[in-house]
Image (cartoon, rainbow, N blue to C red; front, side):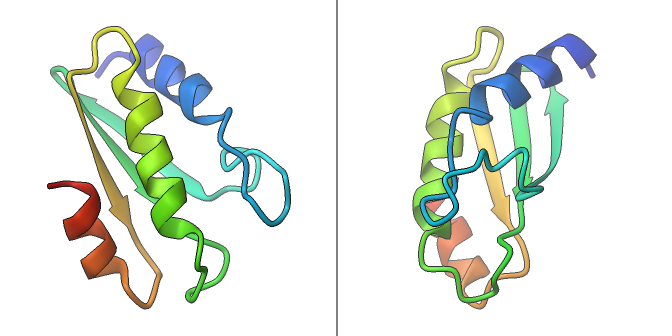
Length: 94
């Protein structure tokens, strides 16, 4: 895994702010992990609240930002710790 590519992805998703707090999702610890396999990025997101109404938007934005990074052709977003995680993951990663 390319540490440089992971850092580029982290920088790209760090521009996304939690809509309630106005703080970067990276700074808040919502982005739990970023890994790369070839040209596919996997980002694990865990909202601070298991009923967070904004996590789908955050996940969609993270996917969009990550796929803008040179060297990433696909980003898979995995939401964990949310009441609707399975549904959100299915919707975001179609």
